[in-house]
Length: 384
Image (cartoon, rainbow, N blue to C red; front, side, top):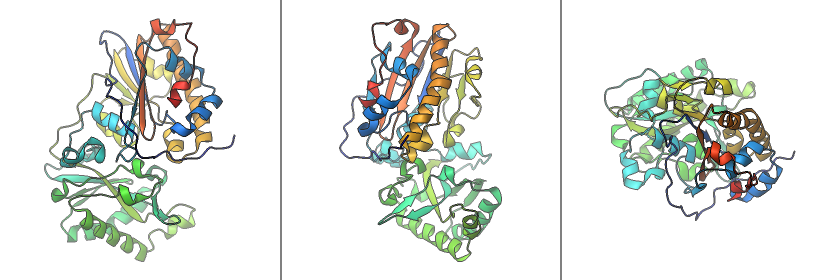
């Protein structure tokens, strides 16, 4: 199947009214929330992809719902993706000075404090940012950030890069801490108002408008440039390039948060399955791997969250043929068994939340809704 390729980031999309948060609406019932990042393809491709998709379970969920199907458009230049904002809201991440001054979507989620605790780091004070070793490449007339999750950075490589950069941070009074190969942290108390973008929001795009803006932006660019030159002078990327990997030639800064911020609140989910990337830090004590449908249905808990994240990679790289294959697999291995669990009373209800690069849609399905035999299953909602 030929891969369809496009990037949906057009201006001028208006927001529809806010809908209810996707939490169990009857706590006495066994309810499952399902989040599917990049389950919504770009609007201009959605109709064609819906015609090609062989996803009968998804078609039923989108058609035979017990609550009105809700679709909300997000600013295409938001500094985090819709599923990142959704998870941030559900777990109650604090609003930073940057968010208060410019709006929730004009800065990345305040993830640094939660991520530091997740990595066993617990500074008592200060304002901290997340740093990712990154690869930025030159396109025809602009710079592009590569998906940091695809860099395959090894521990010994990251340690060498960290040790090389560390003195540059110390010289200007910016403490630098090591979390793991892909995640470092920097303290900058006077940059609390800096507006930053999550790496996934900026991935594959011209980074100019996604770079940090506000207090400290020039100082950050200067420091970033010094690190880049240091690594270049030391040929830090040569060994990776010889192995056919992308050189680590920059750093991406985001997720500013106060170290004193309280740990993320736990919604009334007893289990949380498959949180992707940085969001695992939001529910460290409850996060579980979803090895299969039986794992999700086995616990006796009344409420749970399941994240199905297999569409993120093709969504970020605009590989829509590959996206379609993964969507069909997801439908066969997850959505169809979950519908059967609903029919067999292992579940009482489920809420499906689909997101795209700039849209979020939500629908709730119950056993009673599945009996609407007169409603023809359809994927037309994907193109709504």
